[in-house]
Length: 483
Ligand code: C2O
Ligand code: CU
Ligand code: CU
Image (cartoon, rainbow, N blue to C red; front, top):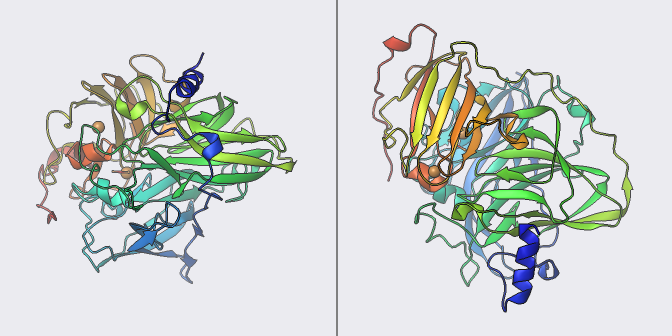
């Protein structure tokens, strides 16, 4: 008996309801799954694609008839799905109207450190930030969210986040389901807790070992949503935008699906799976098959581990139309980009993850922890000596070479930028660094459980011209700090 069947029986046997697990017959409040609007910017005569993003305050009705104070990007909660094509030069204007200093980080983008939107690029209240870069990386589902030092958890929790899609004309993309909102569906998954009057419960965001764990799930900002599908194949772009919760995503009837992409882009070929673990910050693209007239839940089934891994949830009800449009079969080959391979003699760096520190040190915005030559492929070894964490590196793409000394499971074999690091696990990564050098602007690596990140479980690295590693000053000018 699998864990869900066991829990279902246990729930039926118990009086009352299982914590956090919505029963299908009570799936009534949500209505249609909202699809975040697509925003491809405006292309000027100079060919530059310009975007205006207003970080703003608003009111959102999560529970029927009740309003919550929320933050959003160009709206009251979450933000539009940004879409760019490899080769585009993009110019952003980020207006901070939330009333406190924050940042906007492009998670998964490979760009110069000063454009990254990390804690060194604070945007004061009523100020604007105008980064610009040229997109040069494979097709991927990335995202954006604030990254202010010590304040990220609350800013994301209140609603500042959205997807950021990169298309690449050189890929098989045209052969995949790609009609946004029809057979290519973005799913931003977040857990929340609500007060009796329908507000976002904020008191628990900055407490506890892992920080916030909610008992309700929002998908694209909606509780208990329903999606109607009209094609036999549907692509879902999954983003775990939760503070700490880890999902093990699949379908309630355990049907299999094809994993086609992870954080940093398409896999060489689809991987056939029935469950997929996704920790905060990670993305995955899957393609599922539907039959006319059926109904099934996308759900998450917990497993033994730390509290962030344990609970069961329904995420999305999917109803297939009586007659579905037949989709072309998935291509067998998705990407010809070779998988990252560390060269012989690759530099190895070791990172010991403890309670809330990396290599025994809390984050210091004036300290450069690692100096990396541009274009390097290195081996980074993560050694987790405590409870579960995850690990995200800005600017890079990496591949998991080993998890506890063994080849990683299928869902971790593609190119990524964030990886779950289970309790007491060792993870070995091949990390490929980009070519934008700047000895005085660091990128971050950190645990993406947002409370740990805010507590300082983060380090900084700079990318420098090869051969100049030793000339790099080891301290940065102290950045202004906002409490
Ligand atoms: Cu998604 Cu450093 O962040
Ligand atoms: Cu990032
Ligand atoms: Cu952590």
